[in-house]
Length: 245
Image 1 (cartoon, rainbow, N blue to C red):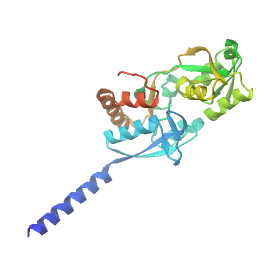
Image 2 (image 1 turned 60 degrees about the vertical axis):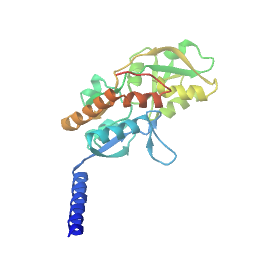
Image 3 (image 1 turned 120 degrees about the horizontal axis):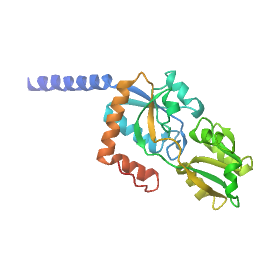
Image 4 (image 1 turned 120 degrees about the vertical axis):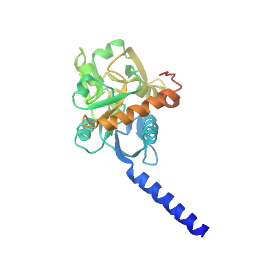
């Protein structure tokens, strides 16, 4: 008799667990997968990087059933609005212009300075010449509003290639993205000019109609800030950078 009771209880527990898992909100996390260390595709063909780890932890804390979707940067906002995924977690700075189209959670990464990189021997004048930037970024808008000439590319890798080929005098991008290229170039690439402060911190992009999802993610970000796990991930992926929330 006890065996029957235990069997019934076990079945009930398993059924309850299955129902609980089935009740979890399914969320598709959209990212570019081409902007290390924020996000990239690893050797196994999987989305990896700082934002993969942050996103997975947010989903765990918010009790969301999340999958990852890779999308080109230049259409990443349009495809969120169209419903091809439910969030953008792709190194996207919070700006007033973007906020007119989509909503954002609070920042999970503080404002990061942008920087110029040019070939060795370039002068500070390189920043006012032909400057490469990824299309639809805050850097591209900044260059367009300056005295320099902007040349835009679909991917960040192409901006670096443009400098190496001489198509552009310099590239403007997040310093955290450019630093590995400068180090690995062994002197071929150098930072020039002064850092530039553009835009706000980085947040998760959400459709304006998804207020409930925004609330869940904001609460999860709060938890990660308070327990120190967000600061630890920033230090892990950004060369020991110390950020206190």
